[in-house]
Image (cartoon, rainbow, N blue to C red; front, side, top):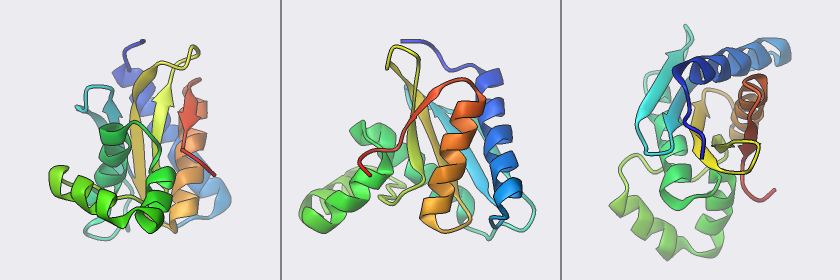
Amino acid sequence: MTDLTLDAARRIIDGALACRKEKGYLPLAVAVYDARGALKAFGAEEGTSLKRAEMAQGKALAALAVGMGSRTLGKMAIDRPHFINALQSLTPHFVPVPGGVLIRDAAGGLMGAVGISGDVSDNDETAALAGIAAAGLKGDPGAS
């Protein structure tokens, strides 16, 4: 497993925000965590609403807590609501909707997760994947 550097975390944020501007999404909050669950970098654009930071953090932490992208967790919330409710009670800031993407190295090793909030969840996820790719890493959003 490769450690996620601060430089890579900043490139993820910059790449995600560049995607947002290119696609015309609403302002975003971006949280990047390393594999151990420590916040590595955070950025919020002007115009994000009050709780977007916590939503972004919750998407990333949900992905890290279970080892799968938050898109998959969102589907599990429909199919297995009791399981997701249990996870939410055990994990602070657990947000099981798209926008929480695992960060993997070239060999598939877990490096961390990025969570984004600000637009609709599918657009948040698109920006997260673009940011991860801009850093030269692989994004794992979960099942499509």
